[in-house]
Image (cartoon, rainbow, N blue to C red; front, top):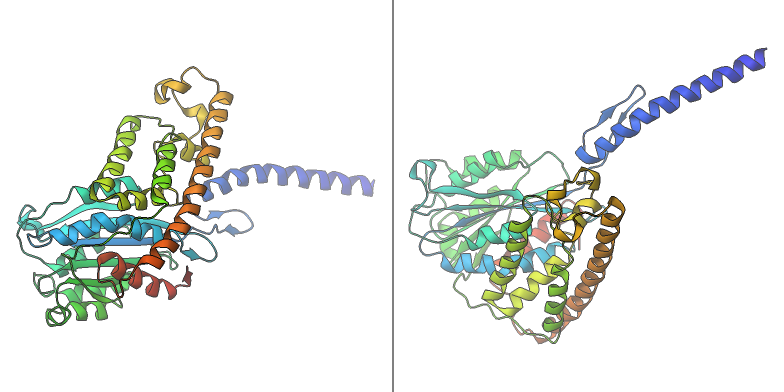
Length: 392
């Protein structure tokens, strides 16, 4: 009888554990999606968040800054491509970019001639679209105020392994405006945000204008760029093939939902915008689209199903593209899987070609000590990333 009681007690414990585990399994799934710790009767389960590189670009769009804006448009994809090779704790981080413009007379005076163009976003097409929307006009450049505004408005988060970087670029004294730059930068340090300054002009002039002091106070780098410099791009034997693969890559997207038409058009427009600057910039963008940073789960079924942000059973018939209307769940999943395999194969080919392309450019390039936006930002990012054990 004693053995029977022990056996019955064991069965009861196992039954209760199974019931408890069923509940906790659901909770654990929720944690994976939200990053929020879940309390159980025994312990608190902590799920590791993926680290993120957060970059806020604060660009002077006053009348003399056309060259700066052009460089930002032209070199966005080179910057993203370089960041795509970063690792933290042997994992690839996420990337989010925010964008502000300041110093433009078209902006409200009562807000310090400052506008948030884009909050932190991982939508690379949207980032490109917003950059291409910028225009210049004369105005007052209040550096302290735009730094403080970005600190107040953006969600910088509390993850200590996130790389939080602010880049402010302009060509007027850093001291203008009602908010002193040192006060704003003190607040940045409290949020673990590194402040980098980019003066568009002479190195010593930037120092006298307190741009270097701003960077030193913000634990960042002081840089100068020749904003009106004509950037030389090197054609390679691999460019045409990469662009052919880019066209094939676009056919793997399975647009769904109310944003479908708009997002497909946006993707095509940003391809066009890159190509409007030069064929080489279009190639840089194609390479970016082959990286893990280029994800479109909000409108693409391939990305959406891959990261569990959308479930086929939840989709309405009107949400589906015409090629999937009337199809069963099994048929939809099979189609999406086919597109996913094709996309991965294309992206792999692009990355392989880009490795050869980069080698070719390195061999052909005669330029030393580049003084453009991309070089300034990448050098600063890599130096500051090393402080948090990011590697390339």
